[in-house]
Length: 246
Figure: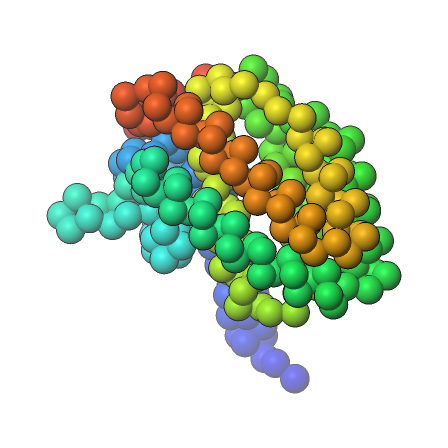
């Protein structure tokens, strides 16, 4: 049985882990939703004050996000949010089409009744959400359900490494989507696109599912590429109502 000293030590360790996880989640969310803009400097002290945590969780979160490709550490300059570009967008989306194609193929082959039920449920939740909280702001609830839907499509693929790669590509793509929304890009019929994907997957039509998924990602690519072309640099955009960095 643990001593009181060991219990206290474990409690502190759990609390530190919770703080680190919370800081990482909030920082990642702010980057993906462009509350922290591409190429923006990330000053540890300002982030510490903004998130109300100590320096250690912030530094750990920044190092984790650097490993994920969302943050860059420059010698003698510190951290900044990874920049965006048309070349990076094209590479990202092309790779995503290939990776998701493999994951979808395996998922449709392996998925059972539970997979079907979870997919239908994920679509139902997504279709009941409003996409926008404001004229240029995607709802965080919609974003979570959107991620859950696409994850449900490939949930039965049975390859954890592939799923990890797919998840990272999806996250990075969502940052570009947020930028295109901020640039007031034209809207699209998301519900219809997702419904067609779901129906094709449930019917186990591999060819149709892969083609619909390719078109779904390509439409996003075209939409975001147009928004990037409409402005000189992504970092010139500013989020409405965002608290200025110190």
